[in-house]
Image 1: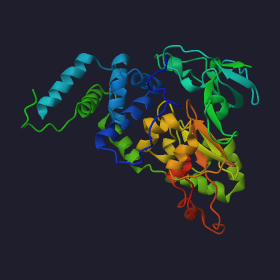
Image 2: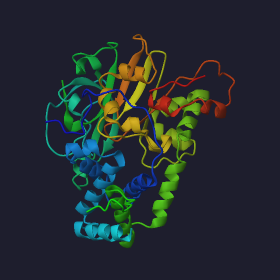
Image 3: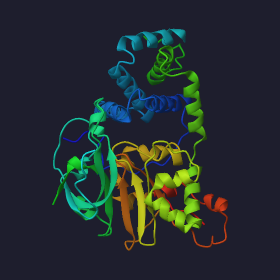
Image 4: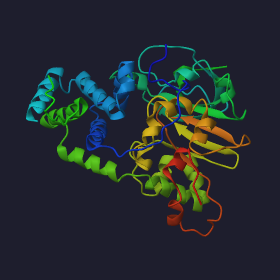
Amino acid sequence: MRSHHDMGGLPAGPVERHEHDYAEWERRVDAMAVVLQRKRRLTVDERRRAIETLAPEAYDRLGYYERWVVALGQTLIQRGVLTSAELARKMLEIEKRD
Amino acid sequence: MTEMQFKPGDRVRVLDAYPLGHVRTPFYIRGKAGVIERCCGAFPNPEELAQMRDGLPAQPLYRVKFRQQDVWPDYRGSPNDVVEVEIYQHWLEKT
Amino acid sequence: MNDPGTYRPLSYFQLMEVSLRELLVEKGVVTEEELAQEVEAMRKRGYERGARVVARAWVDAEYKKRLLANGTKACEELGLEVPALKLLVVENTPEVHNVIVCTLCSCYPRMLLGIPPEWYKSRNYRSRMVREPRAVLAEFGLQLPETLTVRVHDSTADMRYLVLPMRPAGTEDWTEERLAGLVSRDSMIGVAVPKS
């Protein structure tokens, strides 16, 4: 059984070469991952595993940094750095701020 | 570190295995035969690191060179074209 | 539940990013300054360092030998800080053309080239480059004769790859700095060659 992320050799369409400047929030996701890895709070391998275990539709539908931020969150919860409950409370708190 | 079993020039085959977990041996190369291009050194096993374990002892990592013609039945290009893949020792056997 | 009149500036994922960041800062795991510094460092990092390495290899044959033998050490020799980078440099010759892909995710020599372009991380590039490199390279505008061998490197583990393109003809008396200006990011991935 082939994992969804393991796509080498599968048929696919032409490569779209447009490029875009990354949004601030995307850079912050990247930076967060780099800093956490540097501090040995998680490994790149755990992050990759979290991305690979996304449902295939999520993997395809989500943008690159959307996958990253989900993987980061899952890994931090797995590691016990924060809990699902804390994340839920924080997300609701921030939503109310707007 | 685990002892190095292979050296450049050795003919090897990638295990035709399909285990679970986080694995860095791509699907397309499983069961294929190639030649050791070099040993890259030894590194903690990413399969274990992904499970929050330390991945030790470090495992030898090799670059293996495969002829594209041996990998894809319908490959169109030069017969000399190759694909080179980094593969951990425990995924390789001598042919 | 969404009031159509309400402006919702944050997507679910942006909300996630802010939430994770605030929690991490509250818990003392990271500081805002550390994150801001890293964002700045990333923003400043283009592909100039990669181009410098290539230009040096073009003018200095002994340096090139060292670069091909141990990419990381050779970068450090130039004073480039490349923490955790295990670099392997592959050389284009009149007989061989190299190109890099990471089929499993998006591994890339970020310390030398910055953040990878969107297409490098795309399904189509990752799927097809190992299987039909010549067709994909043609889409990038690179038509390679069959007399030239194509080597595709799938960056599956701990090494990171840089293509050392061939030095364009007619640049014999150019300075290193001027030569570096010829080296494009895409030529160091292998989907282009330097223009002269």
